[in-house]
Length: 587
Image (cartoon, rainbow, N blue to C red; front, side):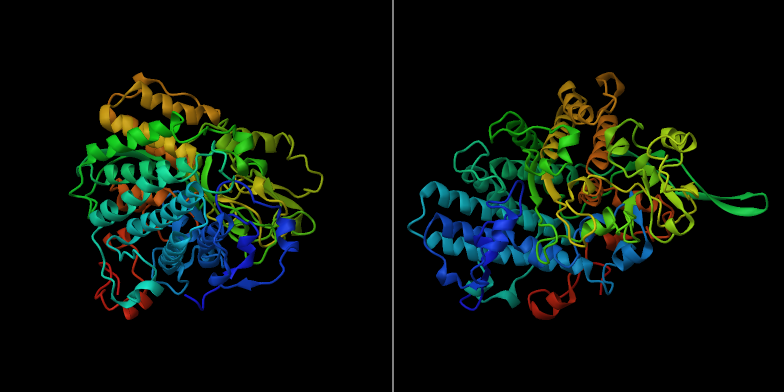
């Protein structure tokens, strides 16, 4: 440990959670007196305890997002996302052991965070000059971050090793066996979050600093943990309706085979067994999820609310109380600027044209889940752009979608389709081109300078809206369909100008369950949730294979049993003597 270092930038206040920086980014960059300090140089004080916690937050960048590996392991493997084959590469096409190592980054990144958290906990516990309240808060944040990392790991890999102390302290890195899923939850994740929610400041406490996780973050994540277990342990055979199907059919038109896109079809899936969750009590887990989510909504853990849509995805919205935990970034910074916005939002050249890095978006089947006046597609999707080279070379522009009001606006040359720069017309090619998808604006609207590779787009890990929909799900699974479940669902829909649901629309629990899961797909697109929702409900294989093997851009979507879990990295197998084999189906 004495040979390890902590970047001084952390001590100057850059925080990577919901909220803002302690100081301005400019101040942080200008105030660096030196680059590194040793752990023994950190003072025994509230500020010193903060430095240890910020070192744990830093792993979000230093071990996960800095090289662009994230959020690929969270987003790319699901049914409603698509884009350029070269962008999705091996991982996005189901080869989780491909040369891109995107899958391995989840394992190594999360265990790096856990190790840093263990180091911080040990050091903070030795401090005697930290006020008790602040010491508890710092420990609670470390507990939260450990639990959050283990939650991702157990969902992705199943049985996993547990490290209660840092590798430096134990010296046992190469001999930690995998612990069964049930024990990971009951002995590690749940106890950590139960402690954390009582230790971390509420966002209404005087000691709370915007930009750090708060008590509601821990309570909300614990509700999500219980809902995950509750869904996974729901008996095999329970039904869920998903709007899906093959993305296109080939039709012969005037002697030419043409790819014609399809509309999604409501399809009933019967839940498969989710291995490792058989011995949980689904009802008791949903009871816990219900009460925790209700407490967050009732203000027990501070003041949180659904932000107005226009505020939520704005630059200023990054500090709103809806973001319970998210990655914060620094525009243009080599370490703290993020790269995922290149592919989700695109990069602009000097002429204001988007380059060919704009490659990751949502499929037509996802877009058609919405009414066209729902803000999440009306405002939440890029409807027109000029792509350098392919568009600008012939004076044209691109638009999406080629139906409904947007098609009419193109035909009538309504703004923004009256752009005098576009002399060659607008096009929306539906022949499987990687250039035409529902590209999101939720990150685009946060970016200070879209001409940069590394931007200040934030990636949310947990939002208050998630807690509200968990409450709706738990209420329905316990007693549904109920008015309180529908009311919670409607609160999210109302914020987005979506048509409200009525209780009498839902004949049974299954129909409301399906609506809530669909709402989650709509609300949390490109926020790292869809794969895990399909997994926990035991419909991942059915949903993926409903696409018929390929999506519109020829990304492979066929999946088999082995894809239910990620493969353990080869290096872990070579170095950890307590792990003798990989997950089923992986070498």
